[in-house]
Length: 352
Ligand SMILES: O=C(O)[C@H](O)CO
Image (cartoon, rainbow, N blue to C red):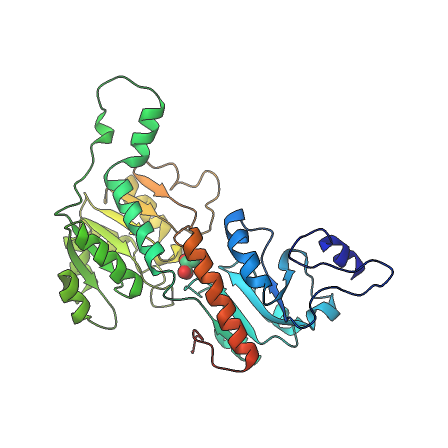
């Protein structure tokens, strides 16, 4: 325990401790403890994370925490988790007897076993709404960058090449092209609004529900069959949650239906697309290009065949990764955690 305390003595804002003589912690005993990933994260999230969270909680860094630190473990009331950064498994749950909430930064909770967590009497919350704009923006950015050869253009400029513009920089028009959105939920709808502004034709497919009001607002056409959307779209953007029903939703069969000139954009979860099938489709020019914010695993290992392909853009799952959005996510995490600890219904509890 002492070694653990010393580790944090010089970490401003995390835990400050008394001198050896008093041996008393100078942390605010009123504040509940949370376990959170902190040090491993890029400075951007730490900046957004620290002030807002520390106002209300004492933060125990997951990176240095072990369940054997039982007196500390007993104090943990909530876990703040970003993606799969903390493996919230049964063993961790068993080691935290006073845990009340697992709060996920982001909307996708496919990395959490919610029934198992709930079976410990622990609530799970996420941060919907606040991620919608930034995630839709990254979808548009990927589509535009791929269509208009932004990455290639940058490399060409940096090579100070004076030759005539090479063919590789010849892009595809966005205005007038057809965008097929698979999953017109909150984020999908934000994508549709942006695409409407870019004068695209919009198709969408939802497994569960046609959205007539949204359709009218952006002039979108519903495709009852996903296959119909795949056949007709120049750009296919995947915006569904990962669930057993959407696991490898886009495989060899679906890719074969797409136009040879089309581009697949994935801003949902890597596992919604069969990556081996995608590599093959790109190698055989079944489709023209892919632009991915998400892969499996993340990050992709060095030398992965996807990375070697032309016409592929891969981002490190950065859909929500901007200051304003991250700050809003963190505030929402705090709001949810405080509600659970105060015994009131949190705004974003995920009910199974
Ligand atoms: O799920 C989300 O909201 C984003 O992918 C961030 O994890």
